[in-house]
Amino acid sequence: MTFADFEKAWKSDQIPDKYSYKVESDYAEWEASITNLKKIEEIEEWLI
Image 1 (cartoon, rainbow, N blue to C red):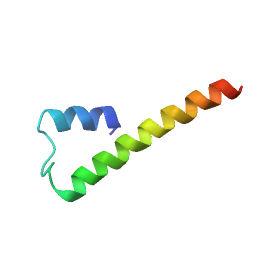
Image 2: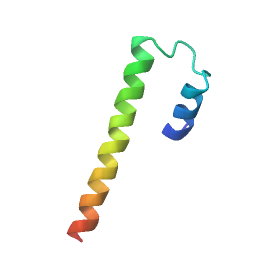
Image 3: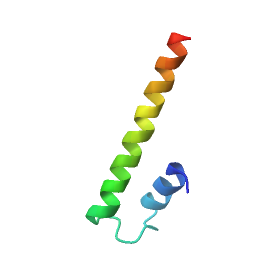
Image 4: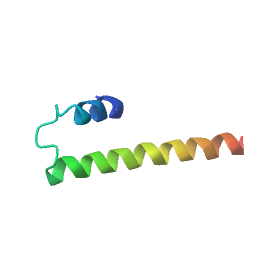
C-alpha cells in the first residue's frame, strides 16, 4: 500500500484502531519520510 492509499483509508475511517499509538506513530513516521524524500529530491535537482 502506498502512503497516498493509506492516507485515503485513514481519512475515510477504514484503518482499524487508527488512533492507537502504533498506527498513529506509523502514520507520522511515514508522512515525515515522504516529506523528507521530497525535500531531498528538490535539493538533488538543484545540485545537478
